[in-house]
Image (cartoon, rainbow over all chains, first blue to last red; front, top):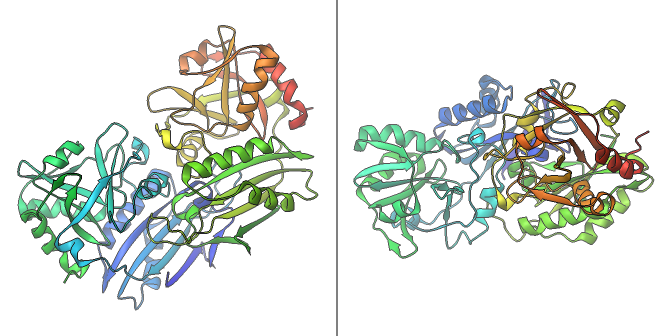
Length: 274
Length: 274
């Protein structure tokens, strides 16, 4: 981390109080934003964070977030920004009391250097044994309860599998540990429906809209591992690395497809892919 | 909170580092222990925490926990002790790296004053609309991903419902937001099976063993709201407040039953119930 701080109301802190509810219960939300001269898709990130606040009944104004960010991002041109919101400190037990003041943490880190081959040739991917619980009340938002992703990611080294896929308990394929999944099935671009679990990514949202214009129909639907293996092209995406084609899963191999390449091209300026 | 501190390796801190994984992902565990001259059921709490460490692949020695606690508890005679373990700080993203040093937080709080009527007459209870996701990989252990409990507890004021029950997604009744549930069905003491979700409480563990001696058979099984309403007696329990009979749920009312009273008597010394 290059820089980071925490604001609780008007107080500026350097660390989370011992009794902070983000630590105690994962009672909060986060966003990870690529800064490439400008914060990429920032409006979508704030939309999702505010949707998360409504879902968790966490009272925070969008304008408060915006003012924290305008200070934090002054002069920053190339970084990864993490924003965290916690319901605040205090209380013994799960009950929420009216005196809790939400806190906002802002952290700036250097952009990781991913191999160019991830973009050009694609990545090998594996499906995790760890499965996502079906939890509609928490689906879509980017809350801080992320043990499933931690356990999933631990199953293999990032050097071998830069990303791994996760299925829901009922066997549907949902997403990557930190990305969303798209595939081309029978000529149509599709992505898993996230009503029951998964994080609705900001780049996913952008792609769902842009793909209508760029490549015709795109569909959110129920998908399985068999659909992936039968797909003509497939990729994972998130708002920090962009789009990585999938080149291999088990015995199946893919060349990078035309639709994937077209969407990479559309988004290349955000992710500085050479 | 009366006192609290955090140990990361040999470093003593007063707050969680901004990048701590307990805060970022709920990547850790906790225990809440009643101190009544002695820590009550401490061995069981440490057993569960170590089981959680194994499940999360978190490397912490039981002896390290014990030595932190022996310092923290010196001279403490009456309090609630919270122990938290985090995988430690650092890393960008979910991947765990070998350099992460687990940290242990210890917090001492004053014992809440619950109404005597909760013990004597029992409590009114409601079933939450928020449901527990079926997540066998995380079932039983007391990890830090607790948004379901937070959302469940927010559905009603603790003054009206001192505890609330939670069902799994499939409709089975599992536990209270911060307690376990027991009921007497057809003369047999039963408690929900927790293989798919729920926290396996330390007092629940003690009761499962003691009940064999004190009152004959006790059974972990699949139960629903109908079983609760048809039960002849029922109670919730945890290792901090002890045993609270349930006196009312919806239109159903119960007098405090003989088995409940007997188990309250057996455990009364731990919970200083007058």
